[in-house]
Length: 173
Image (cartoon, rainbow, N blue to C red; front, side):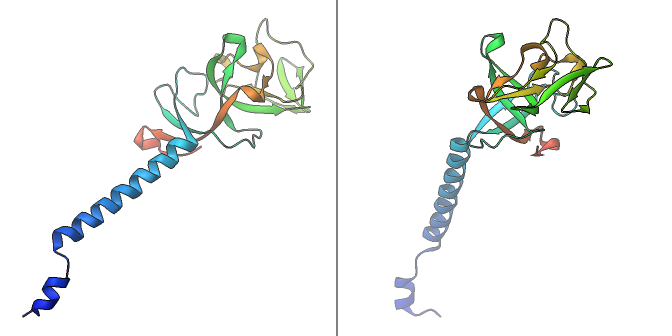
């Protein structure tokens, strides 16, 4: 049998449960606020990034990560197409030179599987200062830097970090 003084001093179970639930909700809300302040949600449209990313998939884009490197996937505003938002992979950075050999792009002397685009940029092409060169993974079905040249770093919205939909493909990119 419990001491009457202990019963008066111990909180009822409802208060304990309420306290735990509100604490968990607070943690969840803080977690989502952190996610929302650091990430941008983007819906993949089109086929230009296949097989890496497919239309209908959803990704989280880091707003604050500015350390872009070759092979990163980015979201950017494309001035060439009236500032539409595009997703592409960085394949060359400031100072890199792109040339042609046997109808394939050569980046800094390394042959790629990419072909030039008709009515695109002239080669050799040296990526200008504060600019990056982007290509779609589905190179036969992508409008990218082969057409419009490098994109200014100021036009980059963010770095694609995670795929969160579909659930079967959740993960870091």
